[in-house]
Image 1 (tube, rainbow over the protein chains, first blue to last red):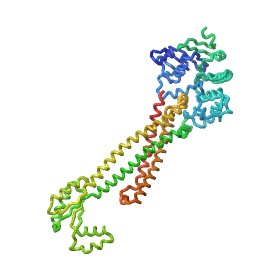
Image 2: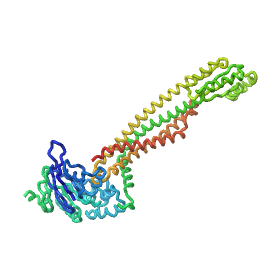
Image 3: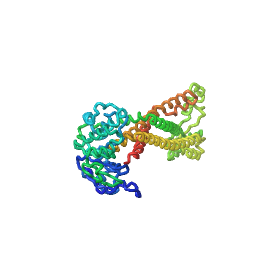
Image 4: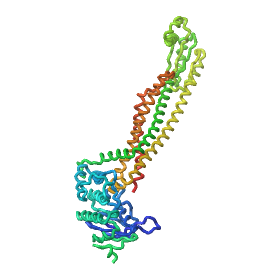
Length: 230
Length: 304
């Protein structure tokens, strides 16, 4: 599903590489944590996947397609297959919960009839059916992140990328969000969670990839952060 | 997506661009006012130059040289002289006015006092026969006058109004160049106002745009509401400007007809004839400047 072959990304010539010769393969339906301190290259990793950046060297393949070969006008179609959830939720404050989720279908030109059918189902899945008419500012952080997740999965992406999804949330709420992501993963979506929340990684016992100063230093199945370096 | 499904694309972008204008009312109003100012100057100059060119045209049509013939010139001399005039390529039209006709025209122009001339009818008519000559180009009237004076045994006197014609011509040229210059300057100002307005609204929706991009909206999809917004702003400005121009024009004409300038009234182009031209050109102008300004303003923002 996602394949990095000898991927290096450097922003400026004299600086250390943001990512250095990364090789990894994530299969369809996997649930993967990518951990590392700030500056380890996690944000660069996500931006490369969305083709916000292009690698300095190496190739990135999604579903066996080299995404660096995409033309500019094809990039939006790549992004439609990859749902993204951010630490700061990035909801539109002037739209209701329902409208925020529907918006993701509107902008790719889905018909209103489909939107009316599908949005309630997505809200039900994230447990927010009763808050459809609320505005983001009226919701708790955990609820806002659920809206963001509903928006990210509404168009059935094959990959869901979460950038520090629990970074702004308390441990209890974080656990609920992780359970939701696990649920989405069991429905067949490949889930990649970038985080530095070590406790949660240890609790979930999923595949764990560790980045440090742009290098991939560990890749363990059912890993915990404690034994990642063992 | 199967093709029979009705897409929500169009209604949703129109909704978005209208929402955006109402969200950024203040900026939009500032842009509209500035474009109206630009269009008002543009419109006044259109009206002014149309009127000036009408005035010049009238002057040109009424411009002629009147060649008074000597008393006692024979019909043969008249015919020969006519042929000489008719062979001159500068001449467009020759009208013969007999002395009887001249008296009649003169007495008609006196209206109720025409009786005064009755005793001059017949043998005592003091008015001469004349040729009224028009030229293709009013600048050639002077050389037609010179030509006529080459036949002193036929020609008594040539009447020619020189200064009036040439000063109107040079004045209208002057106005023409001034208005073209102002139109260009005003267009540049209006363009940058739209450009800046849209850039501000784009910047104010920065977050929304980054969300749209990460969800996979195409650049056109993101751009179209802003382009529509620019077009709407241009259209609103155009309609308001036409309204203001109409008011000003009617007011000015009303003022003129109440004053002693009334004699100029016949030279003023009536508003009905000119408003349609102004309406169409303002709408086209507003839409073009709005959409192009907006397209350029958003294009820069959408890289990545």
